[in-house]
Amino acid sequence: MAKLWNYHHSLLQVSGSLFHYFGIDRGHGTDQDVDAWLKNKPSCIVALLIDAMGTSILEKHLPKDAFLRKHMRKSVSTVFPPTTTAATTSFLSGKSPLENGWIGWNQYFDEVDDQVILFLNKSQYKDIFYVPGWSETKLPAEKIYDALNEKGIPADSIWPFWSQHNPSDTFDDLLENIRQLSQTNRFLYAYWDAFDDLLHENGTESIIIKKQLQEYNDKLEAFVQTLAEDVSLMVIADHSQINIQHYDLASDEELCSCLRKAPSLEPRTTAFFIKEGRKKEFKEAFIKKFADQFLLLTKEEMLSSGILGEGIPHKRIEDFLGDFVAIAKTPLQLDYKKGYQIKGNHAGLVEEERYVPLILYP
Image 1 (cartoon, helix red, strand yellow):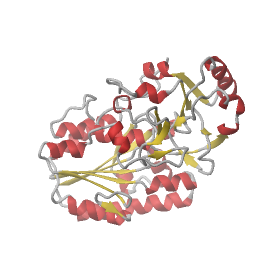
Image 2 (cartoon, rainbow, N blue to C red):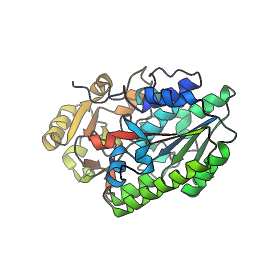
Image 3 (tube, rainbow, N blue to C red):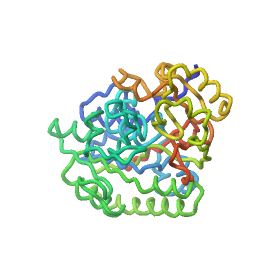
Image 4 (cartoon, rainbow, N blue to C red):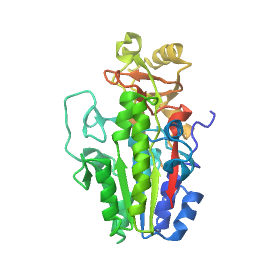
């Protein structure tokens, strides 16, 4: 099988450089550009991740002389699937999705017989809420700010309004939190999610996206002038987005009759759980319908392909992959009871979904 994903110039090496700078090895190497940038030994390193601000979005909507594009050193590949659950967990833990087990928006847990939305600790298809932090207890992944604090290195994180820890109501609030906390910490991670929601709602071509991206650009250009001279800012993303098309999977009786569980993971990377004795039937029917739009892999092929990265596989990874995984090769996605209304999405194999900017200041 041809190599499906490149992990040697990826978000994992960017993360690896941050860990390495503080004396921690995560086993995936480092990024030469980030290593060189860190030689100035900043008093505080700020890693700001703007959800969905991929390279294709930047290049589509900002001129080359814009602040974010001027300071963009290069593009790097995110992890697979190119989605927030997998990418932010890999960036923060320095471990591949194969290793940390965080691979999709919702994942099937047999102990509750449910597809659980990892970030929300709630059921994908049922009206069930799990206790806060449920997913973290099932799939613990040590984050860089926690690892640094354990070593006695002051580090912190900053989040949107929904977090109880350093919440930010607006992007301006987020930047102000960064400015203040950069005075007392050696590393900060800041996450902003609103841009991803905007792209889902409006698609990648909208003037709304252009205006919002220009606003982020202008605010960051002014913001860096308010930081202490020895504070360094990295701006990065977890994935990009593309305009997508929809297929109503739930209404496909031929395929759904083969399923023993509802699908999980993502509409553009979908795990299927097949009834005993019907795998051949499902595979033939799926390929007949979608050979040009999706790559259909068995669980074993997913693991041997290297698409989830390198390292020791998480002990639960096979449970999460079901029997087959369908990966989108085109803008088409498989909607199962949800997702019909969105215009933009991610988590497939299309190149524009994959690449994120590495922006380093100064």
